[in-house]
Structures are given as structure tokens and as C-alpha cells.
Amino acid sequence: MHSRDQTIFALSSGRAPSAIAVVRVSGPQAGLVLTTLGGKLPPPRQASRRLLRDAAGQPIDDAILLWFPGPASATGEDVAEFHVHGGRAVLAALFTGISSIPNTRTADPGEFTRRAFENGKLDLTEAEGLDDLIHADTDRQRRQALRQLQGLLGNRARDWRERIIEASALIEAGIDFSDEGDVPADLLAPAVKAITALHGEISEVLAAQGQAERLRDGLVVAIAGEPNVGKSTLINQLARREVAIVSPHAGTTRDVIEVQLDLDGYPVTVIDTAGIRETDDPVEQEGVRRARARAEDADLVLWLVEGEGAVDPAAKGSPLALDDRRDSSGGRVWIVRNKIDLSGSAGALRQGEFEISASRGDGIPDLFEALVKFAAAFFGTGEGALVTRARQRDLLRRASDSLHRSLALVEEGEELAAEELRAVSYALGRLLGRIDVEDVLGAIFQKFCVGK
Ligand SMILES: Nc1nc2c(ncn2[C@@H]2O[C@H](COP(=O)(O)OP(=O)(O)OP(=O)(O)O)[C@@H](O)[C@H]2O)c(=O)[nH]1
Ligand SMILES: [Mg+2]
Image 1 (spheres, helix red, strand yellow):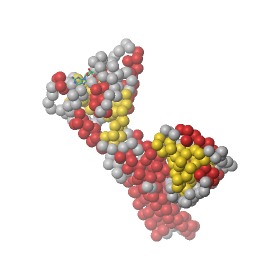
Image 2: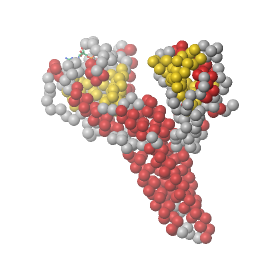
Image 3: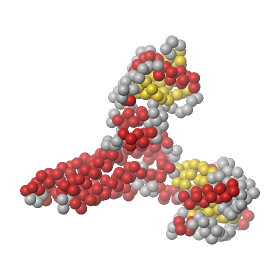
Image 4: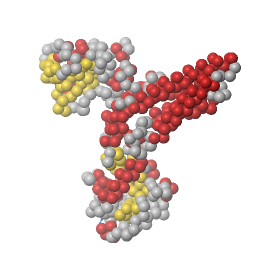
């Protein structure tokens, strides 16, 4: 039996126990599932209250049922929804009841969305947007995912694809003519114009995206420095809770400690690391190794020093090579002078330099504000960004490269130009998920949650 002929079910709401749990069922047997457990079929798209009963006629739960006959449903198939009380035993009894009906099985991760995709309810970019929306932690992530789910990129890609087909038709018409001599210029000129315009539009979308892909993962800020300078105290301040142990003993932090922050809608991971120094203690050595590795990979390093301590992380014997990464605007390493409650302010600060008292809180608002600005610049405005995944960007690049080549070729050989345009259309088809082979789609949908 084809897997699509099977009826799938899953818990679509959060983990039990919960007040209410939503169990979704999709496939040809969804109606039978409803009638078997809940009596007669509820009217479409209206909530109905029913007492669910198992095969022996014993009550399972007092529930709300919904019936969405296909194709006007989320997946395009018949869909049933059970809103039950979210206890583990209720769910277990309901699952037993559903699976006793032939040709039903639990859903694989992302299988509901995959069926929706296969039934043309959404394209692949929209499916990716849906996945992002479910995982969005901050407001900006949510807005970006929603744009994707609303099909902004998909709509553009569909439009580009139609225009490519038109341009190809003009060039192919030219190829037919070319037996009789040169291709008429009045056929080629509009094709060249269309290709140039498309190339411009796709390049613009590629350029405008800034770090939109990174908005899904967030930016990483590492707090690093010598032992005992107050790194853990600072992460606790930024997190506004006690995530790391603080002690006057140098070498307190050994592992890398991470906290997720929502900085004005930007997702930021701040990490606290072991103080960097030479040590004989093998555990601390490992901590120092991890600290260096994470600081090197971070998008921004807050290098903490005590008061007027030395400001050059490289000169401290630190192999961080942070200097290389510093850009002209004072970029990716900031010097944060801590414990100014003891040393007092040194006065004039250079760009990328801050004075704080991590324990008292002095200077923390300024540091926060600078971090928000850094995040804003890092992610770009983001609002116009359509490309949110490496997969999308890669396919658009290919489309753009082929367009570029077709322009160069059009004068020399129309066949070659037509071939490049087919490659463009292929790349855009893959972007929408209309062309991809089974295993590529499988890899994408497997990353989704169960019940979606
Ligand atoms: N006076 C003062 N003391 C501070 C300040 N920040 C941290 N401390 C103290 O400095 C000591 C070390 O602080 P931690 O936050 O543990 O320093 P650390 O850099 O994480 O140290 P390691 O994990 O050992 O590398 C503790 O006793 C803190 O209370 C500050 O702004 N002013
Ligand atoms: Mg520490």
C-alpha cells in the first residue's frame, strides 16, 4: 500500500500532561476514525462535543471533535481533530482506539505538512516558513517566518519561472528561424530584455537578504578574558538570573555556559567561558581550550579586563588572534572594563570599549544598547529579506548565474542560451519543491516536528 493511502495521526499539541491536547488525523480513514470513536460525523468545520468510546464501549473522554473533509483541509485530505484532556492515559486510550482502525498509523515528523505540500496546499518555501514559525523564539524571527509562510519568496519564484518560460519561448522560436539565416532581432531583443530584468531582480533579492538566514539561528556573543575578571557575573547580569557560578576563586568556570536572549527581537546566544590562562589542571586546560574555540567562532567577543587592565587580548599571550578579526569600526571584539566600582572610571573610552561594574550593574544598560545596535547591523534590516535558508540562496545563485551566462550566449548560439534558461527554470522549480527527488524532500521534512 502506498503510504499516502494510510491514515496518519499524531499529538499536534505540546507534551502531555496538558490541559487540552489536540490529536490530528489525516487520510482516507479520518471520517471512520471519528465515527468509530465519537458516533456520527460532526458537521464540517464546526466544533462538536462528543463522548469518545473505545471498542468495548467504555468511555475514553469528553471531547471536542472537528471534521475537515478534503480537499478543503490543511493537508488536502480528510482531516479529523480531537481536542481531549491532555492526560497521558487519555492520550494512550485515544491512540489505542485510533490504531485499532485498519490502515492507520502514527505520523512521521513533518508528515502532515508533507502531505499538504504534495497536495499543492503550500510550496516548499512556505513549508520551510511554517517550520520556522513553529520554532520562532523572538518577534523578528516570527515575522520573518510568517512572510515565508505567506509565500512571498514562493510567489516571486513562480513569477520568475513564468517569465523565464516566456523568454525561452522567444529564443526557441528564434532557433526555428535560424535555419533560414540569422535570428530575427525583433525576437531576441525582447528575450534579452526579459532576461536582463530577471537577472536584476534575482540579484537584488540575493543582495537584500543580509544575514536573514542567521536570524533563524541567532548571533553568538562570547564573554572571554582572564580568570576572575567577572565574566560569569556579567552573563548573570545579561541573563537577569543566576546561570553561572560566581566566586572569588580564579578558575571557577570550566564548561561553556550558554543563555538565549531576546534582544529587541533579535535572538542572541551569550556564552560564558573559562578564564583563559596557562594551567596544569587538565580539567581547566580543557575549559580553556573550549573557551578559545568558542570565542574564535563567536560573532562578537566581549573581552573582559579588570579596570584599566591591558586591553590587547593578543598581547596577553592569548592565541585568540582576535586582532585579525577586528574591523575598522571597532567590530568584533569589544573591550569591556569591569569592576569600575573599585578602579573608578578611566575616562575617555574608545569605540568598542565599555566600562561596567558587573556586580553593581553600572554601564550594563549602555552595553545592552550597543549589543542591540550590533545585532541590528548584523542581521540587516531583515524586513525585506526573502531568502532565509542556505538551500534557497544556493538555488537562487544558480538561477542568477545561469541567467548571466544565457545573456552572454544569446548572441552566439541560441541553443546554448536556451539550455541555460532551462537550468534557471529547473533551479526555480527546485526552490518551490516542484522538481526535487524523494530523498531531498525526505531530508527536509524529517527535520520538522511530529504532529505537523
Ligand atoms: N567589586 C566588584 N567585584 C566584581 C565585579 N564583577 C565580579 N566581581 C567579583 O569578582 C570575582 C570573580 O567573578 P566571576 O564572575 O566569578 O569571574 P569569572 O571571570 O567568571 O572567573 P572565572 O570563571 O574563574 O574565570 C567574584 O568574587 C565577583 O563577585 C564588579 O563589577 N565589581
Ligand atoms: Mg566564571
